[in-house]
Length: 552
Picture 1 (cartoon, rainbow, N blue to C red):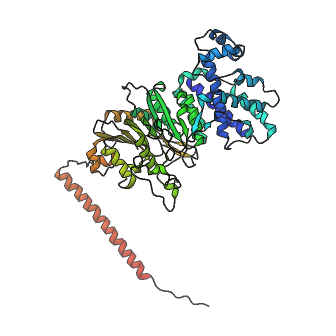
Picture 2 (cartoon, rainbow, N blue to C red):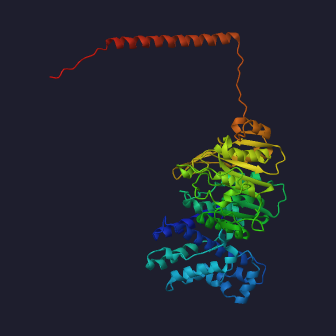
Picture 3 (tube, rainbow, N blue to C red):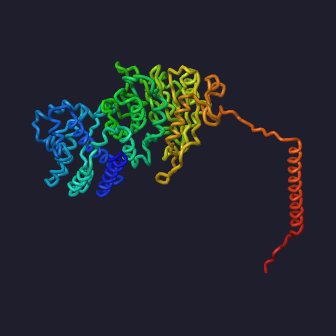
C-alpha cells in the first residue's frame, strides 16, 4: 500500500470518528476535538508499541513476529519478560496487556464497557505520565488521556458509544507508515485539525500556519551545509506546532530540542499530538500551556535570566485585546520590551497589535548568533512611526535583518490580512538583506467558500533559490544594504526598492508627424462633437416653460 492510500485510510478513520461523535450528539460540542484527538492518539500509541517490540533485537522478536496476532503473543509472556522487553524499546509507550485495543475489543460484551474503556485510557495515560505529560505555566501536569464516554449525557448510550469507537480502531494499523515520519503525518495532522481551525477565535487565534509557508521558513533558516547538533528551537506562540515540526524536520529530529508555549489549551493538546507523531517525544517536557508575554516559562537555570535559543519561529496573533495585561510587571522589562507596549484604544480594544510585543520578545530570547523567522502583517514593513519603526530600527541598525518575503494574499484561508515573513540573523555577516515580493505567486483555490492561495512546489523552490543565492530579478527580488534601508525610512517593502523603468521607442520624424496629425484629427472630432452637444442642450433648455396647475 502506497503513502497516498495510507493517507486516505487514515483520513477515513478520522472521518469515522467524527461521524461517531455526531451520531451520539457531540458534533460541534466543545469535547468533540478532545475525543477524536485522544482516540486517534490511543490508536497511534497502540500501533507504535507493536511496531517497536517486533523490531527490537531481543529473544522475543521471532515469537512476536511469527504470531498471527502479536497482541496474543505479548499477553502470553510473563510480567518479567514484558518488563525485560520494555527495556529494549525506550521509544515505545509503556503498554500493559490490558491497555491494548485488542483487549478492549474482546471485552466489548462485558457489562459497563464504557467504564472499562475510560479506565483503560486514563490508566494508560498515568503509566506514561513521565514520558508524555506537558505542563501549564503554573507547573500543573496536563493529563494524556481523560474519561471520554462521560461526554455523552445519555448514560444508557455510553456503552454503545465506546463500542463504536473501538470498532473504528481495528480496521487498519499505522505500522507500515511509521518510517514516513513528517511527510506522512504532516498531511494527516492538518486534516485532523482542519475542522477545529475554521473560526479561530479565543484570546489568541488558533489556526495553523499553512504547510507551504512553514516549509519556506524552515528551509530559509537552516543551512544544509551546517553540521548542526544539540540545536534549540523555540516558538512562543506555537499553536499546533506546524512551524516547529517543519523546522525540526529540516534540522533533523534527533539533532534538535523543541521549546514551546501557547495560551490555548486546545492548541497545546494538538501540539503534544504533533510532537508524538513526529518522533519528538523527547521535547514534550518543554511544552508549556500559558501566556508567553506575561508568564514566560523558559527561563535560565537560575530561574531569573532569560533562556536563549538557536532558532525561533513564530506566527503570532496580530491583533487581540490584551488591555487587562498591559499593567503586568512583565511588560515593565525595558530590555525585553524595548520599543514599548501598544496603547489601549478607547474603542476596538481587540485591535491592539500584540504581534509587536511578540516580535520584541523573540529578539530578547534569540541567541547572539541565533536566527528567527516571524510572520507579520505586511503593513509592518512600511510603518514609519511608533513601535514598528523602533523594532525595525533595532533589527536594521544591528545588522540583524537577513531578508523579507511578502506572501500572496489569502495565503491563510481564514484571514484576509496580507502577511510577510521577516527573517532575522543576529550573526548576519553579509551587510545586506534580500527583499522578495512573492505576492503575485500561488494558485487560487476555494476551501469552505473561502478563497485561499496555495504556493506551488515550483514556486517554493523559486523563493528558496532566490533568497539563498541573493538573486535579483525585476519586480520580484532586490538586494539592499542597510544604509539604503535607512534612507528609505526603514521600509522593508521590496516594491519601494524596485527600479522604475520607462520604456522608450525610437521612431522617425515622419512617424512622429503622422501620429501627431492623427491625435489632432481625433481631438478636432471630439471637440466638434462636444460643441454639437452643447448646442442641443441649450436648445432644449430654451423650450422649457413653467406651467402652473390649478385645482379644480
